[in-house]
Image (cartoon, rainbow, N blue to C red; front, side, top):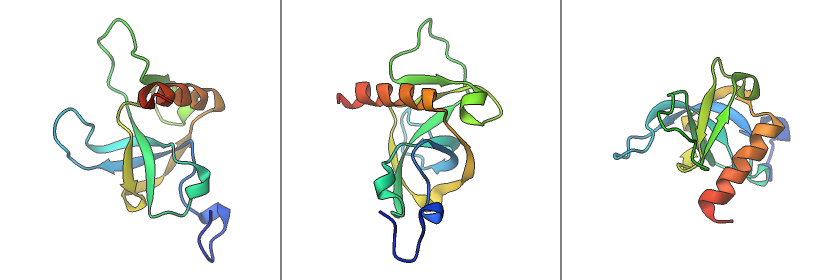
Length: 124
């Protein structure tokens, strides 16, 4: 779905794109402030004033295992300067105005792992 007068190329963020986003402070252990985020919303909703994203972090994990809702991505898979994790347990709907420019795009393999983690989190 592309808005009137817009082409697919300028219709906003696309699924799999990595943008820096300004996450609001909601309290608790939810990610806040500027972080990279992966767009997970369907391409059919491109051009909307909001988009669904999952945040990324480069903070190292102290646990001996990675839970099924965390997706490890290398810098080559994301286009970011260092390796990190996608926090699929914290999806957020943000106004597209809170997204900065695109800084990368997940590889198809990383996007497949992200999809599996979202299916786990959302029980799909």
